[in-house]
Image (tube, rainbow, N blue to C red; front, side, top):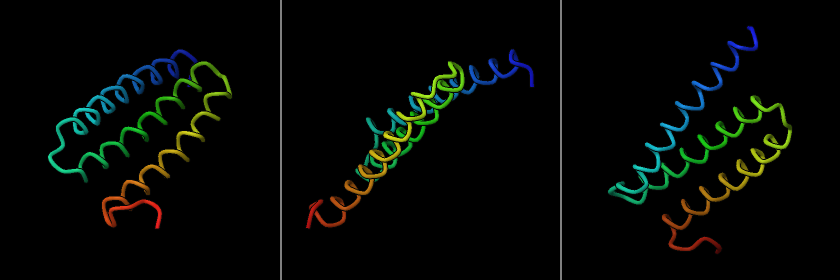
Length: 93
């Protein structure tokens, strides 16, 4: 794969991820149930993670990958906390 082709593929994927993030934000805003909103939030953080990875590949900077690790940890913990809150009404027992 040539560098120009890789750059075009990364730009197209960034546009598609931005559209997916916009759809997730719309679902969070409009979502009729709180479960839909939590699922949209989960989708949003995964798409943001992938967007940051594409930026890291484009720039060649390793700092973006470290940020992605933090986003992944916080996103997972946030999803678990919100799911516990919905099921039990409290996060910490």
